Image: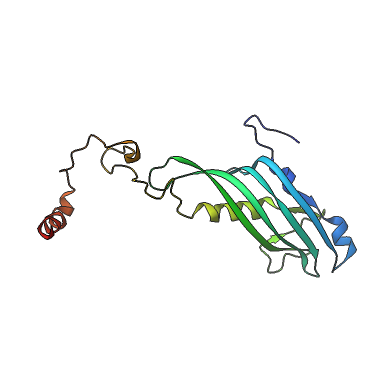
Length: 176
């Protein structure tokens, strides 16, 4: 496998030759196991690993890809921006159209190559959108100075308040 200078394997390993399955006709099934370390799926998606079992089923519309993949990647806490490791389980079920893409979002190239990279990329980007915290009681960043409040208090004065919120602060103080 080709390793890049950043240590990642290129996404070429996600290109599966399914020509034999296309030639066999509808109803044929092939299972393939993935166990890929540190892979660059796309310019904006790097994974620490990708593993699992995929079932490729030939249909009259193309190839149905089904399976459960486990992926690990680094993301950041949405409150304090500290890096955190995530492990996710991806439930894959997608039809790759062949010979014509038809209503399918993904298709198989004329040479019989099924590229999983766009599908994996979209699934990982969906997973990254979930708001993940480094810990349940993450305090986040100070709105004034940007200090990570999990590491201690910041040097900003507690009395400093946005003038737009002064009336709400006064109301809160009255209710105490």
